[in-house]
Every structure is written in structure tokens, then in C-alpha cells.
Length: 245
Ligand SMILES: [Mg+2]
Image 1 (cartoon, rainbow, N blue to C red):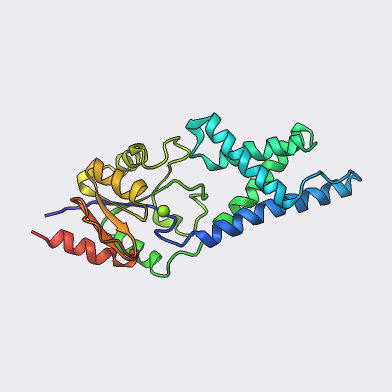
Image 2: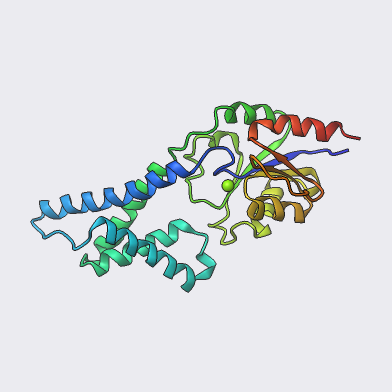
């Protein structure tokens, strides 16, 4: 029989679909930066910077990849990588360093404003409220969504940004940190996530139960791993596990 006292959740593509928001955020914060910066320079009678959207975005990506390989321990800290990349790009384009730092920070503020505009699955809030009556809940994400501003934040007394711990999943550290803060052990906890490599396998290897959120997948599942097509099927799975002899 399985006795659970805590459940940890991945966020992106587990409790909401992430792709649309990421695309809008990616494009939106960079366009905002170029437009705001152009207006600011025009007001000061300064020439526009030699940055266009397409070239700028490509250069921004390349700079993030460079920083990630130069400072590998930060490879999962996407906010840090973006800030360094923007600062360097703006400085290279002719902004004084102090202005480059300010504008990079402002662009990331816009990034986070757009990034939290995710739409959770309609069942998610009710599901988490019901589960919270019996289990302690945590969020564990590799993403750089603002954990206190995301729409389901109130449901998670414990929320771990694995990239900021410098240990993105599949590193066991974010799981162990969550379990410690939830005051439990792997055998009494379940992790719920969509990624086989970043959610399911590391949780299973620690001895946790795992609910793999995947619409299809017919491989043989290792012990303690169960598949649900959608997170709304979770209560049924948990009930079955707890009743099973
Ligand atoms: Mg995910």
C-alpha cells in the first residue's frame, strides 16, 4: 500500500501549456526593449542604436548560448543568462555601461510581466485546492517564471526554481530540497511532470512515485511510475494507489 503525504509539481506543460506564452514573451520583451529604447534616445536627440529585431534576436540567442557554455553552472538560470546577454549586446551597440544595465533589467521586467500570463488548465486550481486538504504541495520548475507572480502561486507553500539553485532537473537537488521543506521522504512523495528525463526519471530514481503527464506513451513503465494523459486524472491515480493492497 502506498501512503503519500506530499506531491510535487512541475509547472510548464504540466499545469498549463507553455509554448504560446513563451513565444509571445520571447518576442514581446525584445520588441518592447527596441521600441522603448528608440523612444528614449529620440527624446534625448540621440541617434537610434544599430539594432534591428531579426539580427538583434539572433545575436541575443547566440550570446545566451555563449554565456551558458562559458559559465556552465549558470546554464539553467535563464534570467541570469538573458540579463548578461542583453547587457553585453546593448553595450556593444553603443550604450554606456550604466544605461545598458538599466535597460537590460527593464527588458527582463517586461519579460517576467509577459511570462506569468500563462493560462492554467481549467481544472488545475480546483485540483490543487482539493489535494492540499490531504497533501503538502510544492512546485519545482526549471523555467524562469516568477514563482510568486504565477497564477497558481497561492497553492504552493514551497516553490523551487531549480535554475536559480544552479541545479536544474534532472539534478536531484531541487527534488531533495522540496522534500526537505515539505518535511517528508521520497517514499512518501509523488512528483507530477511532463518530462520523462527531467521529471519522471530523477524522481523515480530518488525513490519517489511519479505521475508522467503524457497524452500517449506505451513503453513499459518502471516501478512507481504511472502515466496520466492529463493532470486532471491525478486524483483517480492517487486514489487507486492508496487503495491498492
Ligand atoms: Mg514541464
